[in-house]
Image (cartoon, rainbow, N blue to C red; front, side):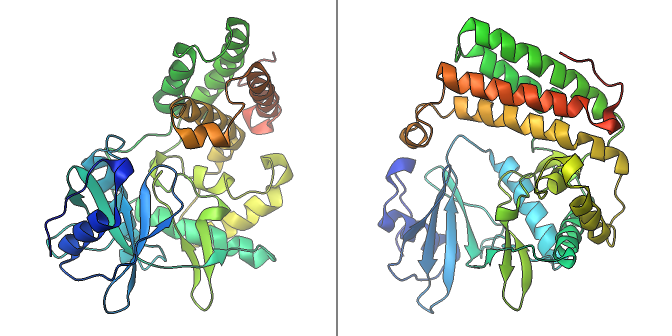
Length: 334
């Protein structure tokens, strides 16, 4: 096998991919290099000469340090050791789960497919809760010192500075956005008081939970794993706002608490976390403006109409937060 030579990330060729993976695995592959959808990284389906299908994920240089990726892999391996159904990174012959070729880190996974879960009964909601409870039990056993900490001070604050420092909107709209976000953050900081943070999936919506025939549910995509309140992985599963999805949350918690106690006080964070996710997405978009795919997918991003719509959504969400009885006394009206 040849030594891996990987040029610029945007110009990964099949030969470079195959050479890099063959060297990391110390085995031969067929010529299959089928690209899979991924916005940030480069992901390919490969095949060994024995017919085994693999997934290779090449991480975008400059986005993650090795220690950050290692925290993600450690969490996934902890889940796998607890026999939680996930797609864990493969241990490589030379040790570890991260390989590198010409400054580009990559990892390999066994190919596992499934369909998005269909929620048709109360028991399906309990199954979701049980799965997340098992993940959080594994996550509670150690820290992820290099990963993002989901908290209004450590995430939302810097995200707002990114938005307001970039000149992305006219001053009058910036002031309106600043006003509502300041009010949301003030309530959020108080809401987070006394809430324990731990390793969580971070992006545990239903699109990241697959139903595999005869095998049950499997969680995928730990890219956004973080340290945060466990309720973050629960509210994303809900079909509506917290006050309209109490039954679903109760069912989720019935399954969850078969494995781990849940701090009911953290339910006050659900609508706060929804607002924080809106702010996160706006800030993330502002870092993608030079990407041609972003311009195609979000052609009106940054227009006055765009900002008016987003600010109106945040103002509405602020009022949802104010009307949450669990946050009574945490803030004042606009």
